Every structure is written in structure tokens, then in C-alpha cells.
Image 1 (spheres, helix red, strand yellow):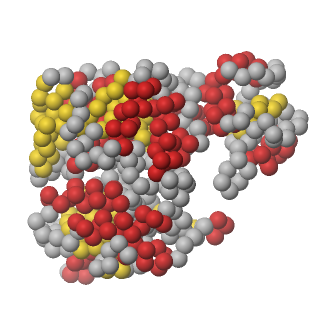
Image 2 (image 1 turned 135 degrees about the vertical axis):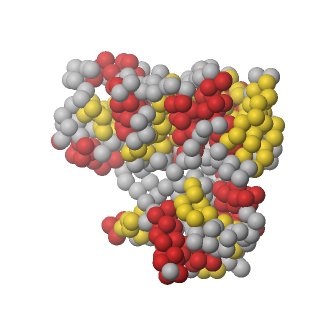
Image 3 (image 1 turned 180 degrees about the vertical axis):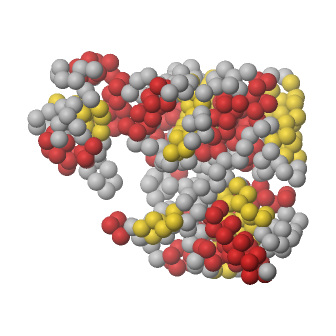
Length: 490
């Protein structure tokens, strides 16, 4: 596509009859014909790389009006990330016909993956994009970030469409929304899970964090789209504010949960392998045996059901699929059974609310003790560490505080801050040693929860040029510890 035509399609005026061959925000990926995005970041200023990008063949540069661009078309905009996304969206076509996005503090990964599962079981070619990567209709997964950069995001969507994928659910993180990393495509439904403290190392405060989330409803979704919003009995008021945003925008609001109007959770009873739900939808009550444990898994599953319904999936197929949902990697995933008979669960919980939710999910299934192992990540929000410790200590019988991803901080300092919220907890620095100790201690009636890393397969040590990622998978380590204990007992 010619540059001038691309600009016009995106609503910009620019000259240039050169052919656009691609988009890049990394000057090392620029080739002749590329449109380069030069953005100011928290650590790196992309404007410093404009000359190198032009030397490599960039024909246009999207940057602030005050940036210096010589030898290429300067597409100037006060918000260059947004402008770059609008231009790139015109280049990366086609995209799937049915796209939904999910935001919130916890539950995004599970909700988009459950939405994909529901669509697949209803006969659609569906994919999901998020923390687990890109999960395609054949269940293959490529590793990714919660919200990839805009070029990767749009090229992934276009590639999926060319492979025949018609339905995509993606995670919209606060970072991605604030940085315009998932713009420009028609989003026909948006889901909201919950809201609590996280990422205050990036956002100024909770209001700033919430405002970033609200961009999904205020600006990103298509006019007239559906807003599927969880309304549980214990919500703190943030979700009600989401409803206000959606209604102000003129979206079709679908509330879900104990206080939901579109989908109402009438009753929930834990069972040995899951929970029995009574749900009211479209004036009809039905009982669904959800094969997943935990109250928050119910909210994820019902929000996913709402998104599937909002995109036209037949209700009978949706509810049939909900009863057949499979666990999501690293989300209350049963990793192994200890030699004593105690089950060991791995969960991604890394905020105070998520820790509390994971513990609450397991509590009805514990007749003995709940043993929780967790830590906190380094170079991240320090203020959530003590509350994480308090959340674990409040409802666990035994708490072991260990390392997570210390990054550039002293692991002992991180543990000390966590222990301020759980002064009676045990401290075992090495994560493998902590997991081994918990499993060795667990009796037949106990449950072990290993929280914090979930699906992650590496432990991040150091930062900058000194950063190393050591292989570490909580599920694999739990299984290795079980084998070691059994071997030593033989």
C-alpha cells in the first residue's frame, strides 16, 4: 500500500508514493519501506534511534511534532503511539470477524482462554492472546506477554485471520491500554473481571491505574459493543464504576454474577472435583457442574460465557461448553499428589487479592491444613508485599515465604517486606527448598498451594545487562520434589 493512501485511510494527511512494507518500533527490525514508531519510554527514548531507522530504510517516522526527522516523512502527532497504532491497523489486514478483549486486575488470562474454549466447543475456529501467548485452534501455544507490542499484536491477529481463525479473545492489560498496544481493530465485546492493587510501580495511584483500564470501554471498543462486567456480592465499588463508563459510552451492558442481571449466579456448591452452579439466564434457571474449583474460577467462567453470548454463540452451546471447561495453565493447576496423598496446586496469584482468592478457592476442599508457599517479585510495587503476606497468613494454616523473581533486588529484603504482613510465617529463601519443605510436611488431609509464578518457566535474577533467567517451573519442581520424597522414603 502506498504511504499516502495508508495515511488517508487512518485519517492522517501525509505525502509519499513509496510502498509501505512493514512497521517497526525497534530500529533493528527496520527494512526498506518500513514505517518506524519513535516513542518516549520510561527508560529508552525511541527518538534517539530515528537516524538509524532512516539509514536502514524507514520511509516514514511517527513521532512527536518536536522530534527531528530528516530523510523520511515525519508523521507528527502529540500522541505518537496512538497514531502509529491507527496507521499499523490499516496495514495489518484482514483481522478475525469476532474480537473480544478482557481487562481487570486478576482473571484476564483464565477468562480469555475460557472464552476460546467455549467458542471452540461451539464449533468456531478460535484463538486467544495474552500472558500464556497465542493459543491457536489446534491448541498450540507460542509464548508471549500479557499485551504484546502493537506490531506483534496486529500481525498476530492478521496471521490468525489468514489461517481461518474467526474468533479471538485477548487480554488488555493496563500497560497495554496506557501505551496504545491493542488499538485499531473492531472489538465487539469487552469483559471486566475485578479491580485491586497492582502495578503501582508504573501507575501513579489507583485512580490512574483504573483510568488506564477504562480506556478499553471509553475508547477502544467499537461503538455499540457489549460490556460484560462481573458484579459479585463482595465487589468494592470499582465494578459499578465500570458499568457507569460503559453506559456513558452507550455500550450494551451485560452484568454477570450474584448481582448480575444478564447472567445471575443463584447458588454455588463445592464438589469433590469442582462445583455445582445454579445460573439464571434469559429467564431460565439451569444447573451446571463446573469442573474447576474456586469462586474466582466461577467468575472467570461466567464472564467468558457472557462474552461468548455477546458474540452470537447459541446459549445452549455456551452452557454445555462451560460444563466442559479445562483448567488454564498455572491457574489453580493441580501439579502433583504428595506421597502422603496431599494435592499440590500451582497458581499465578501475585497480588493480595489474588492470594486471598486462591486460598479461598482451596479452603472448602481442605479437611486438614492449607500450606501456602509464595514470594513477591523484585523491582515491582513494594507496597503490595506486606498485604500479600497478610492475605496468605489470614486464611492459611502454614505459610512459607520464599523467593519469586527477585530481579535486581536483594531477595532477603523482599522476603523481609512480605514477612511484615505475616510475622508468624516461616522463611525459606530457595524456592525449590521451600516447595520441598511444604510437600514433605503435608499430611494426607492437607493441601499445598504454591503461588506467584503459575505458568512461568523461569526465575528472573538480576537486572539490565546482569539479568539471568534460570529454568524454573513450579509444576515441574513440585513433581520433582514428590519424586525425591518418595525415593528417599523407599
